Amino acid sequence: MQQNSRHQLSLLARRPDVATDVLQIIKTVIAATGAWWLSDNVLNSQMPFLAPWAALLTVHATVHRSLSRGAQSTIASTLGVALSFLIGNYLGVSIWTFALALLVSCAGSSLH
View 1: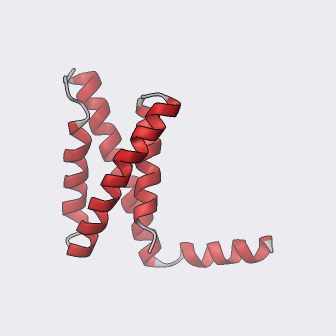
View 2: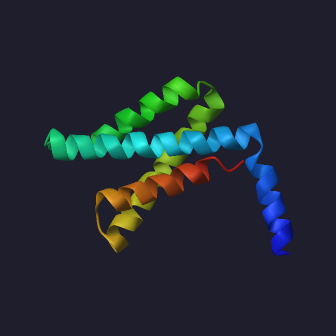
């Protein structure tokens, strides 16, 4: 059973569409988390939560241009806000819980 799961995971990892999705998720998490950190810690912004939205739109616009991906991103963002609220409420608000919520929501949005 475990051998079969590893084999399936290995096959899945070799697919270009899966690799593209994983790289997009990683870039999105890094860009949005970095934007929040920069806005909060370097620029001392009163509204650092707006910076990740700008980063998400920038990463999204340069990589995914289709309408279906845009709709998927909108749904993921909505669910991400709800997820962020839940994570922040139960685990506290920090850069790490933000990154966790973003990672989970982006990974969920790539499920086909």
